[in-house]
Length: 186
Image 1 (cartoon, one colour):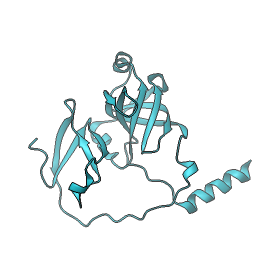
Image 2 (cartoon, helix red, strand yellow; image 1 turned 120 degrees about the horizontal axis):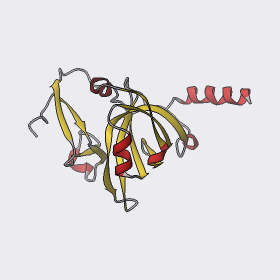
Image 3 (cartoon, one colour; image 1 turned 120 degrees about the vertical axis):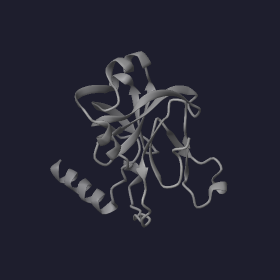
Image 4 (cartoon, rainbow, N blue to C red; image 1 turned 60 degrees about the vertical axis):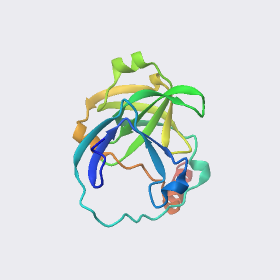
């Protein structure tokens, strides 16, 4: 674990993030915990030169447009899927992540997973099409491994590292404009 030091840039492959259980002990720190498991790979990528803190503006969204949206996405596998116990649903499911290779990444959870079927079809960096449902937290829920289709193409490890931001929701004004355009086209 000598890679995890102040100002080291590291890539953690196969780590799960979750809300803190005892946030009161971590004041002025991150609001999540990283679960490093036996399958986690840690790569040292260099040193960070300290800079100014990011100050983003919070955005407004409509609640009814956030949950349970089924979509089809073309993306690349950023982190291979691995089985883990989900205590909330008392079931073993698979966790992994996807990226666009430019900016964004998303956690993916597969409910009905066949490890043998997965290992034969897709690997880290593969171009895939995925059918999923957006959930309350920022992750995609995939019902079955058959909802993932391998496409032509593969992305290099270095390009996979570019996808490191979780997408943010649209601003209310953008959302209203898009909704109005949809109404006019109907």
